[in-house]
Image (cartoon, rainbow, N blue to C red; front, side):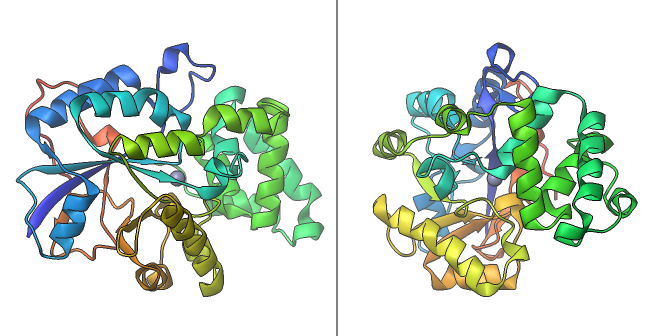
Amino acid sequence: MNELTVVMYHYVRALARSRYPAIKGLDVGRFRGQLAYLEQHGRFVGVEDVLAACRGEDDLPPDAVLLTFDDGYADHWRYVFPLLDERGVQGCFFAPVRAVRDRVVLDVHKIHFTLAACGDPGLLAAHCLARIADWRDEYGLEAPAQYEAGLPRASRFDDPRTLFVKRLLQRGLPEAARARLADELFRRFVTADEAAFAEELYLDVDQVRAMRRGGMWFGAHGQSHRWLDGLDESAQHAELLASSDWLRELGYEDGEFVVAYPYGGYDATTVAVARELGYGLGFTVEVRVARIGRDDPLLLPRLDTVDVPCDPAAAGRGRPT
Ligand SMILES: [Zn+2]
């Protein structure tokens, strides 16, 4: 059995100088610190190494570390790629097809930027509850108080009101109502020019190809970042097939496809469909170090960037189990 620390990143940017300093991201200076820390305490490996270890062909080095980046942000081209390239480290980038190829702003990101731009989660929560009342008949919704009662109160990342808005818009409401509400809030608090925003937010296909030529690896993150475990088998198949078709266009072959399940959502159907479509590795958001040879290769856990020290002088890394 080989241990593998997989680290999950999302936004990595020069936060203080960005247009949305409140976005929940990792500042590029701290990212540099984490790279130095991991360089000192671990050994970076690439997706090929992990695939070979999962097939039992080769062992991973002790303290193996794989860096993963979700959501296909242009941040990854602008800030991450140069730093990894300079160190000869491979990153694995999970990009939703509709973001990178079709240039639409995904609902999940409309919510992030609405929260960052508005700055008042209480106001957003009130807006959502008012809309739930307005749309009750149209979407067959519960009474607003039911949604308030049924949602969790805290997480390790968000205050309760922010978490309320996120959960409501990410999963609490039916998909059509969620999409409409996220779009309405995005237009009101962020911008009406979705196309320009998508251009600024996401990697484009040329950047993807250049990063791939530079040794980076690309993986699937669904077509439009839906919860796979909320979908029936044919819809899950469609999401994962659109992604593997896109990966094939980039030059990957059966067995080399890798996926990070959007929001970490999966069920037994997801894993069976991914296996059937030729995915070799799948990543969740379960927080622990992976045990290659013991964990299902399609269900590898990951640490979050917040679990990694930003100071290279810090003692050996903690290992949540
Ligand atoms: Zn994601």
